[in-house]
Length: 207
Image (cartoon, helix red, strand yellow):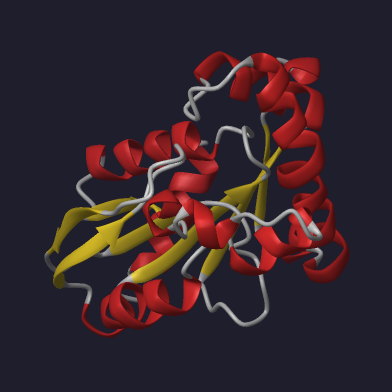
């Protein structure tokens, strides 16, 4: 972690804001590790911000389909076009933004809530979420959180942010989320795009 923080600090001297992506499969620990990175940067005096992209999920009626559910989720699960045009692109240009955006959540709620982004003169912006490592998305530095599907499901079951039974959750992960990740692996090869890899798996001791 110390080497990573030093690298990001050095890169931020030449690129402001430094746009960093933290990605991995569902349940890999992206949010936790992203928070650790952000806190470590702030502790050494860097004006950094962490943005979790889950708020940019589509509403359930759009992100789920009984027809090719995994492919549909991969292609329609998140409002990437809206997120990059209204949030990411302005941040890349100035490091600042004052934006009220519609946010969804991982439950089955069919309505948005409003979220206020207030970021001022960021030196480093960290985005964490799934499917971020694609050629069409530009970042200055990419951090991949490596984790097995087995470990990821245990974490997903423990947090159960969807608020459903274990049987239903396993069904969703086996038919939607993990197959969508495998599609992401095949099409985008995200691990190969990473500048830095953190292993966060029970088999190798958790980070």
